[in-house]
Image 1 (tube, rainbow, N blue to C red):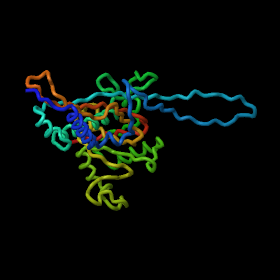
Image 2 (tube, rainbow, N blue to C red):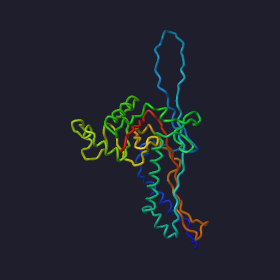
Image 3 (tube, rainbow, N blue to C red):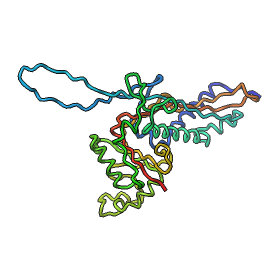
Amino acid sequence: MSQTIDPLVVRQYTDAVNAGLQQFDVKIANKFHQGTYSGEKAAISDTLDASEMKPVSSQLAKITYDDQAYTRRWILPQIFTKSYVVGSFEKLLAAANPESELVKNIRAAAARQMDLIAINAMFGTGSSVDPWNYTGIHGTTNEIWDTTHSGKIVPVGATSLTTAKLKTAKKLLLQQEVDFDMEEVFCVVTPQQWADIFDDEKLINFNYNDGRPLMDGVLRRYMGFNFIISNKLLLRNGVSKNRSIPVFSASGMEFGTWGALNLNIYQDMTIEGQPWAVHAYGSWGSARREPKKLIEITCLEP
């Protein structure tokens, strides 16, 4: 049977729940450069090609002007939802409490989705299914990572994650003028790579490491990389046992929010018994912002 509930009570309770929803346990997406956007897509950067100054050839020489080549990068949103039918308003008050398991579940689902968006954007190609990396004046050109940035891929080499691969990744970033002293650089690994690198003597031997990266038994920072463990990393092009490990600086990637995670509480009058329902939704997108600050390490898994 329908219940008559003061709309102000529903509104106040919804506001309280939404305040609790904003406490995310995001691991990767929050390491990207953050932006807030509106509309169907947004230009995030104009990446200028490197240019050099020219010497003056003679006095009174005419000025010559150069065209500056650049790549405009775009970010597109996706909308994600999660809905539950709760039942009576009394059950709703218990289930949709800011500290309830239901709200925690919604919050965790949103955090996982945000990280998955971020992971897909690093090596993904723009398409109608995966709206990640578009370039061009109007944002209609798909940028294929393997084709455009093949020089930033550390090959698998029949090994898992090693200090040699990390060294190669750092060299590539340094060659692209990434300043490890000015911004943080992250390396995301699965539990498998985290375990495998412990077998590398150059990591665990104190003779190689004055900083003792494993002094407390946890690998948090090594060779200038801050390590993040995730179970969401993708196989390289879907190839079994080949895992793509991203290394990136914060300014190399963009994470955009079109609509923060929000929750509506309402009575569904279209269902028999007119139960109360909870509907959560958010809109986010991600894209490569400065691809030169992103490296892919390919690792072999057992």
